[in-house]
Length: 264
Length: 264
Image 1 (tube, rainbow over the protein chains, first blue to last red):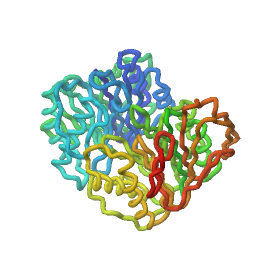
Image 2: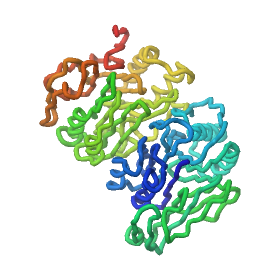
Image 3: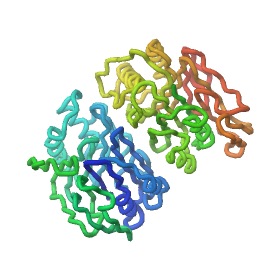
Image 4: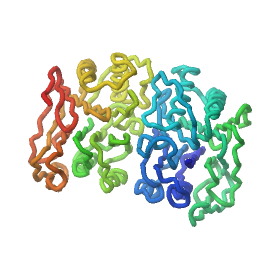
């Protein structure tokens, strides 16, 4: 099993503190030692960093903590291999191009016997069930929405929820999908989320002996959502996703939840 | 104008020495200050690192020199913007997926009025003539070769040479294209290449006061090709491409040259 993390905010944010706690799960506080990756959806483009080793003592992970990249959407993953050998092509986040944008995808779970027919441009490079599921979702979205105008989350969300439900019949399917504008999060078994906004207080990491005052790094207008397999901090009200729930986050708030539009 | 660099070898190689000299051109010995990038085609997958600032004093570039990534194919670029603003989406190498592999592309030159019709999955994310040319080349290769089996360089090379000649009517079109197995290099005006093999000797960088003995890092069976806009070292026999020439390198040697197969 793997660990998922995402940040979605209304202003560029350095997730250094959260990533430090998250990276500890890659070999230190949890045995997810088969690779890690993080995607930064910045204003001027998307960057994905992956490594096939332990996150907890990775020079690249340490570099990213020392040289924070500020982004409005960050998606990260720590791998404990179930399907597919250890290697770069099997590290999440996976990335594919769609509608002139980078889409990134991370999965926690294990899908049994999910071998969809992939006939278009979205084919796996590695051997994981996760990348196969991502390719099929991208194929389905293109089949339903065409390749023309960039679809917005209001159109993507219900389609995605339906297709995610179909895949989840094959096993655990907790995932994060980001198109650079919106973050889609789906839980079949385990996923938590949290909104942060003014007034910001002190929080303490679950996985490291670190504490910060969020008020020092955030202003009155800053608003963000964090999503993680298990809560990353003490002293904050993390909420568990319901089984089968898909949520869309954008601008640091919930915009959509399976079958019901949430007031913005 | 930009600067190109590639390494293609028969064994995983850390191009640290060459990259140090090359990075100096990004703001130090040459004024290419609008971004840089490097793609490592490793055995287990492809990683692309890009940054929108100067390469000569970039923490990420310095990190990559201190923590060498060993790869058989490395493609790098330093940008001096001609078309498209400074930003991550306009940094080379660009990456696209084709036939279950990552393809990377860098361009030096300036194409005037090249606005091809892009109807398939290959559409630009940024605003450069370079990414447009790459997308069109990928579209043309897919149109000619289908999406089934992975095409080998013997099939790709003549098609690419013909399409490259067509694009070059629009302006300078020096480029590097790598599919993870072969390196395709095309010159319309300026590009140099060099083969290194046993016995290895001492070489000195053009752009930095650095010298190394290649015999210390390479064995009798190691063989590699370097390609660069301008020669990177003193004391080695760099050869200029002829105008309009496309060469294919693989396993550290020339495998194909416009219109003529070179004996392996």
